[in-house]
Image 1 (cartoon, helix red, strand yellow):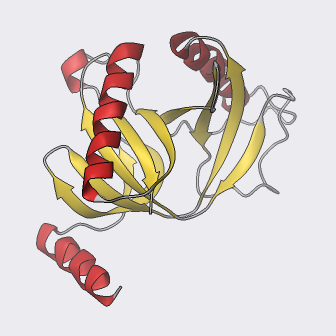
Image 2 (spheres, one colour):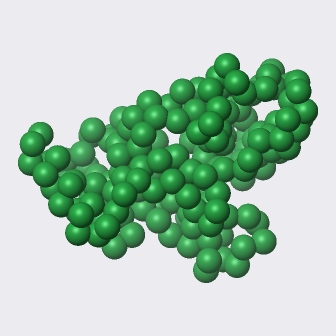
Length: 194
């Protein structure tokens, strides 16, 4: 354990890395990079609050539907009409055994479950995400369902080869607006690991 802490501190000092909390001016879940090799990283995420919805259907249909519900909430479609700042990434995780997906937005750090306005939609729930460790691969482009699945399987196989235990995932993270040029987009596939 002490070796891991020393290694993480050494990486942070060598790269000048602190907690990552912003992407293109948008707040994101706080994390530190514990290890990096090219486009792959192991990150330690801090606790944060999520608004999420469960959506059935195809991956692409579910992200669109889930995004609309959550965007409606943060753009004032809540009990008080309060607008909440957009954050990144929009996250999507498949539920085991079917065509059901969890789509989520991180809520800005200034909010708690007590201070967030109540949603008008019963589909929205708030979840406190605890600290986690994730294996993440970053890539650009406009990823389709097959591309995401292929990347997830390759990352899963690599994690298994390296001896990491996968606890959850794959998680798909999308950071940029639809009008962003494909080569400027930030997308990620991740697994929660131990």
